[in-house]
Amino acid sequence: MLTLDELKQQILQAGLDNSTLCLHSSFRSFGPVVGGAQTVIDALVQSGCTLVCPAFFYQSQTYPSRVNYANNGVDYSKIGRMLSVNYTGCTSQIEPSMGAVASLLLKQPNASRTHHPANAFSVYGHLHQSLLANQSMLNAYSVYKNIYHSSQPAYVVLAGVNFTSCTPIHYAEEVSGRRLFRRWSVYNGQVVETEEGSCSNGFEQLRPQVNHLEKVIKLGQSETRIYPFKPFIDTLSESIKAHPQSTHCGDDECVRCNDMALGGRASE
Ligand SMILES: [Zn+2]
Image (cartoon, rainbow, N blue to C red; front, side):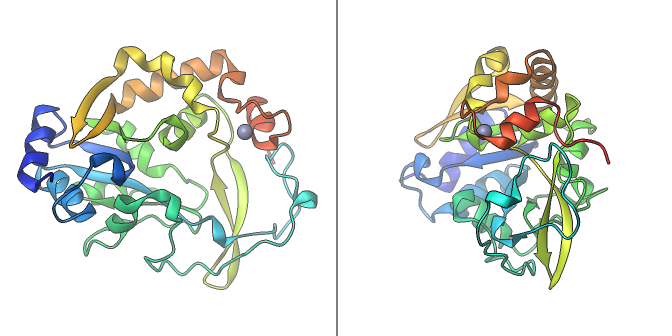
């Protein structure tokens, strides 16, 4: 069983201490951990890390409150009933696919969640306040923008998951000049317009582009890939700009990938 102290030692050896980490993890990949997912969070935060995890809740999505945009990655005529659960910010409102660590991070007493019903991020650790600037429902990746423009060390950390779980790549798409899609959600009983990323099913194809930045470490049994945040975003955004089809999932009928490869949502 992996202990808190062993994990802290591994974090230190990997050079991840005192850094901001965009953490995407499969808790199971760590192997048995004394104290469960809370130990993973404690080990990272006690090592001086600030953690950023997606806390998405797609179930809040609904139909547009106005006419849809062109090239917006969605054909509402082909969508049946939507769940449209009223988002209230409750910590139980997170997709199970976000994983055990992300779900638990949201429940930490001092964790913050950005202001977005469907694509929020939870932020926890001593730098969390500085990562919350400029957030809005039409600025989904504000946390990533704050990390990108900060001089603090920051890493993308993929623990037992691949690039299809790597949300920062959507930010790289935005940096490359793509316009993110607009969606609508039910938020405290009101329909609100939000900004969202696209399909990520093809993102594993991008991995060779950042091989030179990749470092593979072990956290418990988890083979974890880490990348310095800014070079990761810069390299991928340049690559996406040069090869727009490289993010496509391969499904000819994927309207999100088709529209995003054309540059994303048309301007208003
Ligand atoms: Zn797709």
